[in-house]
Image (tube, rainbow, N blue to C red; front, top):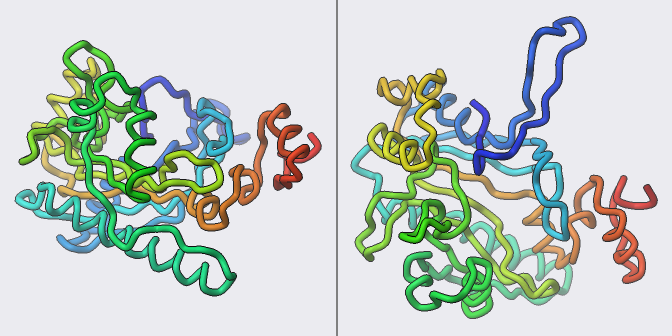
Amino acid sequence: FNDNLNGIEKPATFHPRDYPDLHLEVPHSLAKWKRWALHYYDVTPGQGIVTDFRGIRADDDIDYTHSLYVDQWDWEKVILPEQRTVETLQTAVKGIYKAIYLTEKELCKQFGMEAILPEEIHFASSDEMIQIHPDASPKERETILAKKYGAVFLMGIGGRKADGTLRHDGRAPDYDDWITPRPDGGTGLNGDILVWHPVLQIPFELSSMGIRVDKETMLKQLELSDCLDRLEQPWHKMLVNSELPQSIGGGIGQSRLCQFMLRTAHIGEVQYGWYNPKTVEICKEKQMKLLGLGEGF
C-alpha cells in the first residue's frame, strides 16, 4: 500500500517492541491507501476524502525546498469511468488553484504584503514544451513557464521519450495515468501545480495530482516500467478485480504552501526538521532562522 514514488526510494521502517518479527513502514504518501479508503468507506461518485498526512522520505533530497519530513493534504475523489478526461482534471486544478489564489490575496491584505499570483492558472504540457525547447532540461522548461505565467499546471508527468530518457520527472506506474492520449496530442492525465517563488527565483511545486489508472492503463504502465511483479500485491489485485473505484486525487504540500505564502527562502523557516549543516551555516550568515534541529546541531 506504500507509494513507490520513483521505485528506488527506501521507506523508513521499524519493528514494534512487542512484535519484533513484524516489519512496518512509514508511508511516503497515501496515493494507494486513499483509493482503497474510498472503497472501504463506500464513497459515492462526486464525493471524496481529505487527509492531514505526515510521512518520512528518507531518500529525498535535502535542500532549500525539500526535507525528510512530508506534510500534505492528501485528497482523493470518486469519479465515473467516463470522467477520465482532461476536462475533469482541469476542473479540479482550477478549484484548488482558486483556493490558493484567494488565500494569498487575503494573507497579503492582512499583513501588508504584495500579492503576486495571477487570477487564472495557465495550462501547459511537457510534450509541448519538449517540442518548443528540445535542448532544455525539465527544470529549465519549468522555469520558462513559471517565470512567464506566475502559475502553471504542467500536464504529462512520468513516462519516457523515444530515446529512453524521462519525459519530465518520474512517476510511479500504479497511481497516476501518464499514457492516455489527450486531445492536444500529448499523453497523460496528471500534472503539477507550479508557481514562481519571488525570493528563490525558481519554479516552485505546490501540488501534484492526476486521474488515477484504470485496470488497462495500470497494466500498460507496469509493463513499460518493468514492474509486472507488483500484480501479486493485494492492492493491485483489487484494482485488476475492479474492487477499487475510479478516482482523481493528489497532494498539496503544507510546508511548501507556507514557504511560498510567507516568502521564505528555506523550508526550515516554516517546518521543524533536520537540514544539511553546511546549508544551516549559510542561512545563519544570511540572518535566516531555521526551526528545530536545523539550528545549532
